[in-house]
Image (cartoon, rainbow, N blue to C red):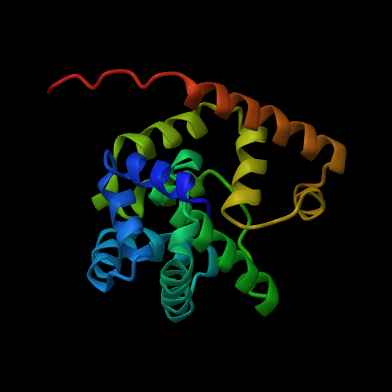
Length: 196
């Protein structure tokens, strides 16, 4: 990374305490790693459990993700997304790899997936999480189904097509339409939260 890039990343991190932790981790600060772990371990463990459905496997993945964070914190770029997203992508990717390599049986995606998302990790029901759940809930059923199967179950388009009995072209068009709707919905400014 160029010195100018490091300065830019450090400047961006000033406004984001999570990014500040990652910058400190990149400098070798073990306390910052512990703080980041304390902040996100529950969320990442819940995500891993949703995918691999085995606590021991999910805990192993969580350990792997934080080892990876320790080794690659210098590569984090706050301009590309929040720390929470960076960590969640790492956990999801590792969990899907583990699921496929171990040939763990998968459950079919259905309306209960959204309920699981809402029920899991209830201590972290922040505004982004609420917006994503709401955006997913607003999708037509066929579009939501392919998103759930791809994201939460880790199925490829051909696997989804086989599971729901639709042509792969239909699956791909539903996926594209759903992603377009989600991007549009999530790009719009969040509505202000009214006091109760």
